[in-house]
Image 1: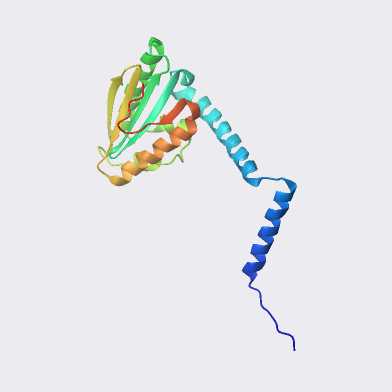
Image 2 (image 1 turned 180 degrees about the vertical axis):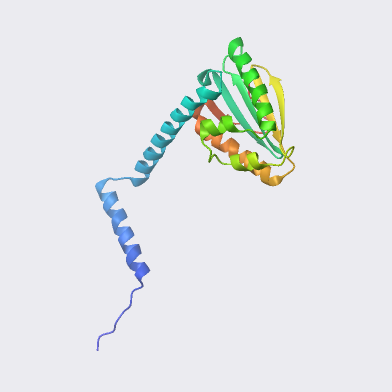
Length: 186
């Protein structure tokens, strides 16, 4: 009588995956590179859409300005500055816009970011649903622009602000960057 062996189904799946990977390697196909290229193409398309919708809400030229989103322990700071500090028109437009949206955000009116980034933007629903006064928004002029400081004692709202900032950095591409607490961006 011959001995019988049982092979678990998972072993067959592993063998099939290894064989597929080996076939890709032999053919020179790099699925990681394809996935990266697809992701990069999707992000470029998304950023172009956001830039187009941004013109509906932001009066300044996105290409002539830089958004810096700095997360803090109590919320975060959104700074917008003209890339050329002597561009008085862009500086004026940035300051006017940030003053205007400060009032909107204090009323939990995030319709501008929702229009630009979509209604399912990370962190947006939590910020809109926050009780009055739970998120404080302070305006301050800085050289070449202005900033809004978002603060909250509610840890869930701080996390929502952080997710909201991350989404904006991703969506604005080269027109935005993540800041670092304690570091000054000029």
